[in-house]
Length: 307
Image (cartoon, rainbow, N blue to C red; front, side):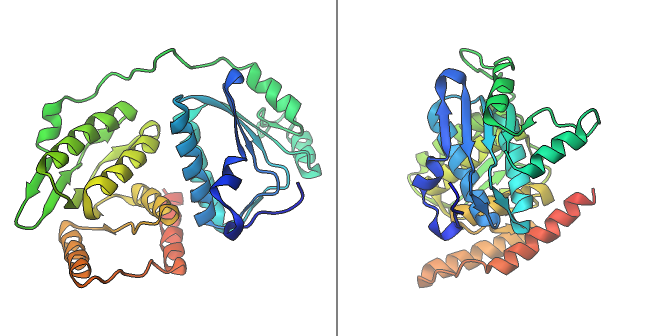
């Protein structure tokens, strides 16, 4: 395929045809031939769809086979592409290979041969990349069952409802999500308690010192999104830390919600008051201007790189 896809042309069907499941080989093949990642929006949208397809498969772990023929990754997309790709690999990959028949890749492999820069998972053709994956051991178990890290009692003190302000407050300060089991246990509790009230609430979430390990991020994003759809009148998070804030902003860009991240509880409460006022008057705020979000993302990425 010689044509290059642009974000305005990309539909779910177009993305889906590039995500190919080889169930017998436990491989997902990503055909990125001619695809143009020209910014963070399309990059995050692509990875959102990949996560949805993996969740629908019923299997957590897969080998990844990536066809990079004529793929373009523009400067504005690189940070999101690398960050989302890393998170996806940590959560779902048993091994990953890439192939690209271009002369540039051939020279790169030849130059790096017998040096520390050599990448054993980069190839110039599909056959060799596929053979490499077939040589790797599967890490799947018949049933993947994580041991619980917490009990229900650990969650009770972290959730409160204030009828006067219509706020459901979630205290994730110092909480660690190690894997998907932790996410499901916590969100099951919150969803049950919220549903028992018989109404929706404004969500105020304290994320000071909260850690979301890579193995938990995909599930955390999925359950958080569903909880917001089912029970939120508006959600504001505060004290997220730079890395978590960046991930939230990336996902917000592709999933059509405002990130609403603030530094302090007082600022978060002020933002909730604004949301309530907007709802009362029927006003819907315009989405953040892309250049503002890009500037914020750039500032965050620079801080992360300096660490």
